[in-house]
Length: 189
Ligand SMILES: Cc1cc2nc3c(=O)[nH]c(=O)nc-3n(C[C@H](O)[C@H](O)[C@H](O)COP(=O)(O)O)c2cc1C
Image 1 (cartoon, protein in one colour):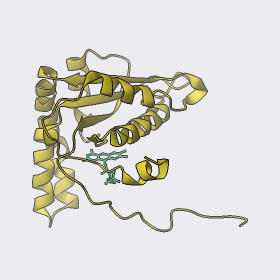
Image 2: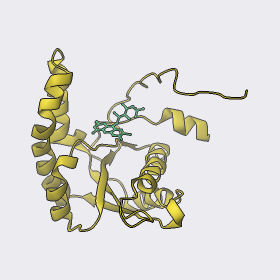
Image 3: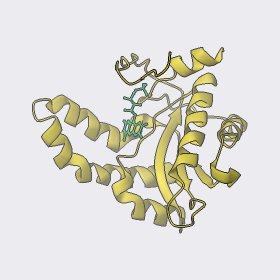
Image 4: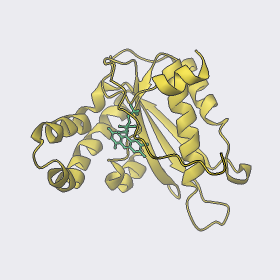
């Protein structure tokens, strides 16, 4: 696939088939992630990949996380109950994804803040590689309210959870949401 095709073709996928993903495929995808640029080349990104019983354990935590964002959803989508119901279902099932990838950040070079930027660009690499491999994923951070519980379940300390990606073979072909105008300014052209 051409790079432009990968960039434009990637979609957030929220429904998956139950097919397992071979570990070698996942290893190749994570290898693409860690070829991203990073602040001072410190490569302060950490990925945890889970499948099987651990997925079921984490899904219980994710389902609880819906309650955290429910009041916000009810405010923003007051006249769209279907969106609220669909979001609840997604939190409970995560589209049946067989694999989850947790993306964590280490500290920034100043040692005071979290290096979210480096992990974010690695996740972008990962999502593009996922798509090119015929798989799907979605960047989700609606579950961050349950970060403490997630870290405990995964045995993580001293790292910041950036997002969780459900990964699997797509059971849907989402339409591309149109891109907004007016986000690029040209000076001196
Ligand atoms: C920082 C960030 C946070 C996101 N959080 C969520 C989320 O919690 N749940 C979800 O379903 N999608 C989430 N998304 C996916 C966006 O909804 C999606 O990228 C956007 O609608 C554009 O669709 P596309 O990815 O198919 O181009 C997130 C994406 C980003 C980059």
